[in-house]
Image (tube, rainbow, N blue to C red; front, side, top):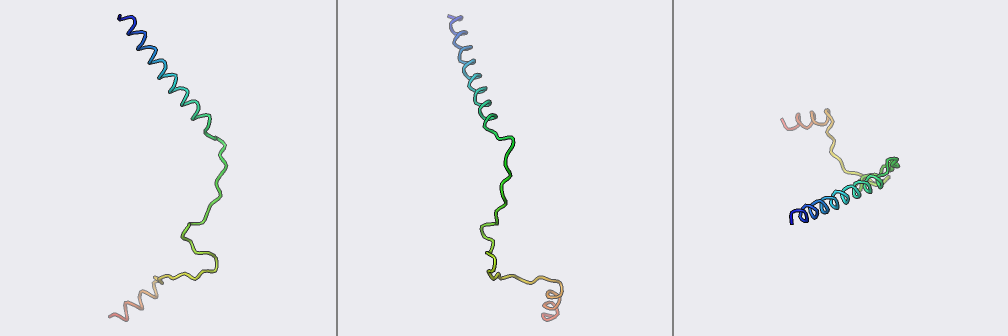
Length: 71
């Protein structure tokens, strides 16, 4: 009975080890080591060329003038 259990144990161990090796080999085989660089895409929220954009002017001169007006 012990010999049958040992055989069953090692057969399952070999099946799991073989499956793990096969999975690892296929993953490495599918990895493209010579990957083509992906062309940079603009940000999806970036404005189209020619669109007007709202912005806040935070230049030093503008901030100083706002500070002097408040004081």
